[in-house]
Length: 380
Image 1 (cartoon, rainbow, N blue to C red):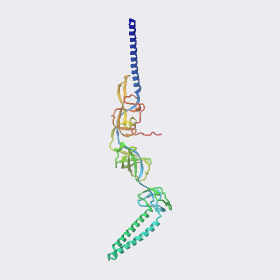
Image 2 (cartoon, helix red, strand yellow):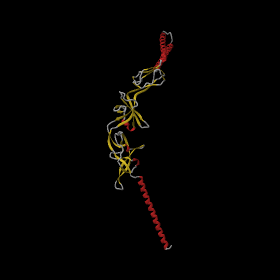
Image 3 (cartoon, rainbow, N blue to C red):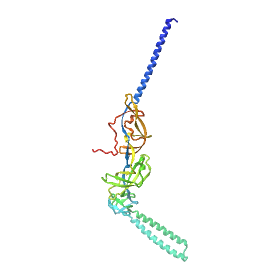
Image 4 (tube, one colour):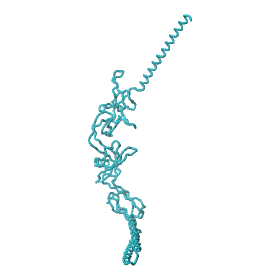
């Protein structure tokens, strides 16, 4: 190999090494820039609004919407059919228990009753005569036993006939107020046909539901206040009388019944009303706006604002930290936090959907969510 050839080979190797080094350096630079670009796109600063968690005093209260019903109610109807021969009530009349209301023609049954009474009288006479003859051994014991059985059979038929005649009269099963009359004199009344409704309006009952989170605040015997638009400006006192022993599997609510005195009849069945129950001493809770909490099947979460040091521009950096919490009672726009947040911590109230752990935050509190304990509907 000549000296010229050797020199050319060395130059070619140096050039190849320089090219390879340049390619490797370029690929490293490109990879670094792509990584930085992806990181910047994956987690850009997010603008959110925030609130500082504070402690406040709450009076545990259950508030629910319920519906009134009569403490006793029935649709009065006939057990047997027949022609209406007498009506002893008017629409809307107050009646007492056992008061006759409607009579159905019972003439055939009464005639048969008289026949059975005659047969019973004869059977009783025969029994007494044969008992006297038995004492002097004029007849056998079997004859007396047959007479006794015959009398008992006729007496049973007599009681059955009397019961059938009683079915021909519709009476009030309890004291209360009748509804609109649905029967007329001379009308044929079919079995089961309604003649009127009967309602016992004092006391009234109101049924309402309580969410699963407030079950511990309800017990039988506790007092409640009831307000209704049917009686504006008046509050009725109520007492919890019954609690359903199981929750509704669909709504996870508990059904509760309370009783309300209604001596003046201002409340009617079907009226809606608001029930409020106050229980125990006031308690201290950390509270947040409802909008700050994300409710998921696996639990409730919030985003806490954390100090992330200083950014590249030297300004304080704020980052998001997702945290599971336990919520309690609600009041207006607020929710009580039982576990997971301490007073003074800053919580994100808007913009949570675009956050994840470690997201950089830009805080803008010019617009904040509702956070009133007793929100009011603005006047039109």
